Length: 238
Ligand code: LP5
Ligand code: MN
Image 1 (cartoon, rainbow, N blue to C red):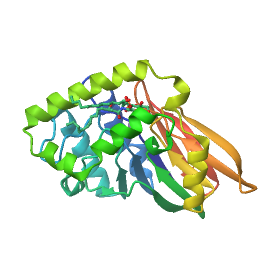
Image 2: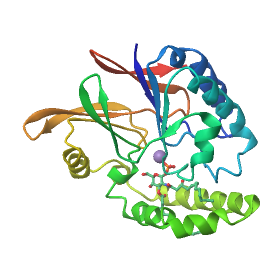
Image 3: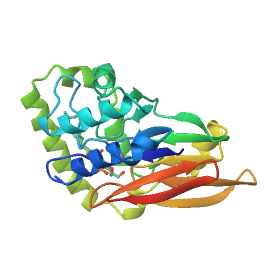
């Protein structure tokens, strides 16, 4: 039995093939798993548990069906950080803290979305501080669904324009931030998404072998990290 990790599906009507791909995955490989972890940005934008966009309903139903047979853990990312208890009830998934350590077949492993590791992206980190402020979130959730949608669309436009002006390196993780997070949690293995640069990075941390595994996005096809007692491998989902 394997433990599976996915992230950055960014489910959206702009990429209509991805929801059916997820549903096949949930009905197929995920059913055989020991557990499924979704490490952020399942949705292009989650605007509150009280306003589920019709495009998301099929995925939610699929997750709920899976969660009845396989433990499902969900961490939010920079697009869906407004998921709360209502979302847990809809999907049967358990929301994880932003930095969660699990015992992965004997290897303590830190799970993160990955955005907080991109410390060179100062503009993003300032934006993050603003939108993670509980008061900002409460004001937002007081707005009507139409107002929230409009604001999210504006933010997406600003983000797209800003990203065109950023060097690629700035939008990747900062190695010192990676090492600090791993040392704080006393782990030699980290799994995260967000950067859309799937890879296994091996390095030395405190004179011992350390690993940072980056999950793939689901923009063209999907990707999954399959972990078993003898190790982890990145595989395509198509
Ligand atoms: O996710 P990804 O990889 O595309 O981009 C991120 C960073 N961008 C973001 C912003 C989101 O894309 C915006 C959409 C969020 C929708 C969900 C929010 C739900 C609640 C709010 C709406 C109701 O996270 C991007 C990083 C990139 O990753 C790589 O790490 O660079 O960061 C940015 O582009 C942020 C900009 O640099 C700064 C933006 C400042 C915006 C200030 C807004 C002021 C208010 C305007 C109101 C209209
Ligand atoms: Mn992200």
